[in-house]
Image 1 (cartoon, rainbow, N blue to C red):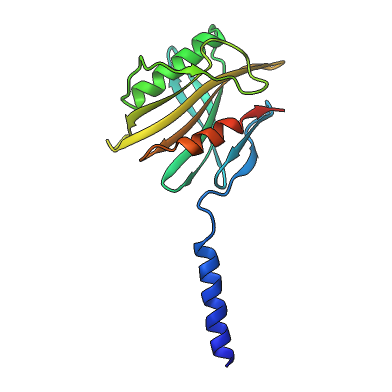
Image 2 (cartoon, rainbow, N blue to C red):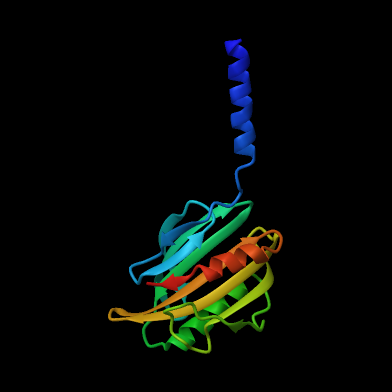
Length: 178
């Protein structure tokens, strides 16, 4: 009888695990500039230098993967001798070229609570390609924040094999500065 109970208990546990949600949204502090976000999975952090026109910049990246989709938020200090608008426009152009997508794609304004209101703060959805050539549906947003230590640029991105409109709305709606 006890082995039957054990099998039943194991079966119930497996059933509960199978019914757990694929996306487990949680609040994450992104950086020292007090950016907060909601991500659908456990976040990992990375830092690296990336090429930028005329210089390299240090980029911080927070992201995770769930349901075959990458969810990321990246930040860089505003490069020297550049306005916030120029920095956002260049980051957008670099990203779209990297995705082999339409660099001239039109977006709509996107300014999370506490961010700078500049015309280059935008959001858009594009079709692109991963480095291995696989098709991607990508939701992107660029925005900025000024602080006593300078200006910072941000990019929120969702890289998915199929459109992830509901997830993109949730990620972008969760972005705010404290």
